[in-house]
Image (cartoon, rainbow, N blue to C red; front, top):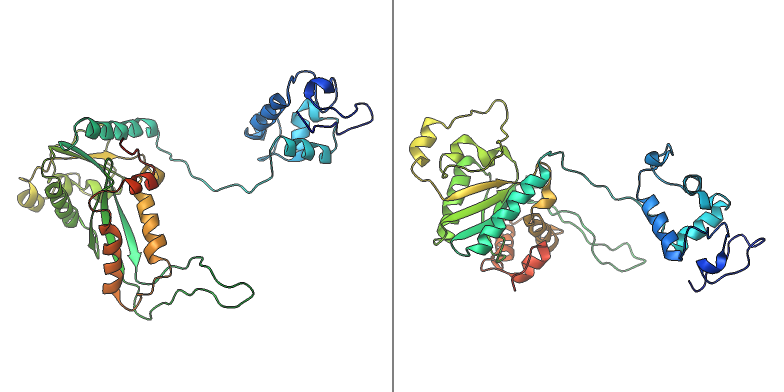
Amino acid sequence: MSGWIAIRPPAVPACRSFQDAGASPLFPPRHSTAAAAHTELQHLCQRDPRVCGVEQTRWTLASLRQACSWLSGLTLAGVHTVLRRARIVWKRARASIRSPDPDYDAKLADVAAAVAAARAQPGRVVTVYLDEVTVERQPTVANAYAPTGSSEQARAVRSPKSNTVTRVIGALNALTGGVFYRRASKITVGFLVAFYQALCLAYPDAERIYVIQDNWPVHTHPDLLTALEPQETRWPWYRPPSWPTEPSAAAIRRWGELKLPIQIVPLPTYASWCNPIEKLWRKLRQDVTHLHRWADDLDALRTEIDRFLDQFAKGSLDLLRYVGLEVPD
């Protein structure tokens, strides 16, 4: 590799490749190319140090030298040089979370099957991703451009009024990018039933609508399930211990005859990243609620929410790309 030189010069002169380096401590004979050494280091840095016998939770220059025999003759500065040449840098870790769901892969397979069913029978089968978001009266604080060297900066002007919230429920069509939504001050079982009825009216030709959603217990309340056709999912519903397991007599009288053609497809637990509509809510926050100027005019804020979501009512390929869904040919 052009530009490579030995780090410890006494025994090995400058060289242009691993082959030229011979038995140099920096370029041991077992590596035929620089790329091979780079690959070994990259794989090592991605492993847990404890697996390699190093009682640390992250790699340091000293521990890498300890674990990698062909680095043992180098100073810490030399190890740093090798890492830099291997395009390995010291960077801050990113916080992440893993779903504890033991059926994570199987549930994602069910999600993929629901989307495939919609692709196989467009119009007759519809698949949507459903979720709710809360919008507060008070604007959220976020970064914004401002002149350098000045105390001037963007301001989130808040209202002395109570921080009223608006709840938005949306259903993102997995094939078209169309967004069907409703607003409410509170999402209840009755509101969800009404939303499902309106969703069915929005897709009058659909013989089945798959609703992919998280495991919020209200989504599968016994009273709510009374309004839907018998569910075919193989996964048990999660409900708080104090909740009833059977629908109330009032719910049966009110919704028992509906039998809406909706099948619920549960996402893995604690896996919000599996729901693409979460990215739509992120865009809503970026374009509307961050630093908004309607803290004293709740109706104006709600109008802006509607304006933002209405642009996707008839579908949007750009939105599909933005949320990471497959765009049809």
